[in-house]
Amino acid sequence: MAEPILTTERLVFRPFAADDFGLLARLHQDAQVGRYFGGVWSDAQVAETLARFVAEQAARGHSKWAVFTRDGAFAGRAGVSFWPPTGELELGYALLPAFWGGGLATEAARAVAAWTFANTAATHVIGFTDLANRGSQRVLEKIGMVRQPDADLGKGLSAVYRLERP
Image 1 (cartoon, rainbow, N blue to C red):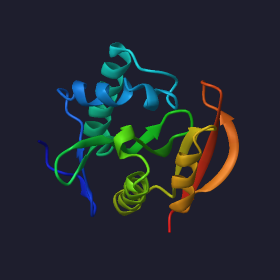
Image 2 (cartoon, one colour):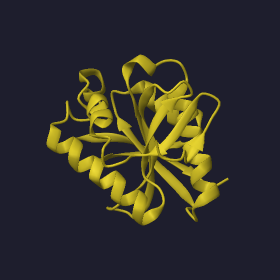
Image 3 (cartoon, one colour):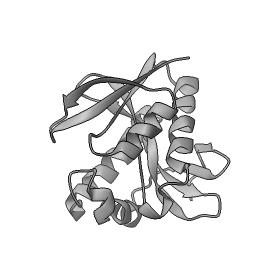
Image 4 (spheres, one colour):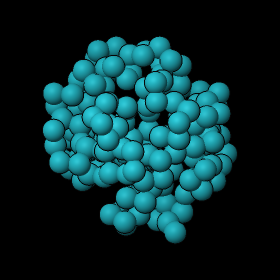
């Protein structure tokens, strides 16, 4: 396993590797996760996303990272990525349903935001979530993100949030 980028009380974050297809597929081919990500992803979508995560980490020093519990269970992904339409950094996360409801998404999002402001020159980060995903909206609000006008990001309207550098 690659060296961790970030650790929290309950989580360990490491960069995705080219051979992590199975992890990302387990996450994005889950029907419950798919409700909020435009449906269950094809193998091609998983492979394309994995390649993008690996390339962005190599080029920029950050991306979406694989997230594990401290006991080694794969929980999902979280991190910060370059958002091409605006050039902003986008904080994002997705956890397997077994890890929903226990505060791990909030812990992950808070840690990623802190890491971003400590390790980049970003003046703010943005976050998006499905309008129907109230749980994810609450996560973003708990870490201090402020709701912005909803935006169409290519898959219908999304709730948009922004967090300024402290």
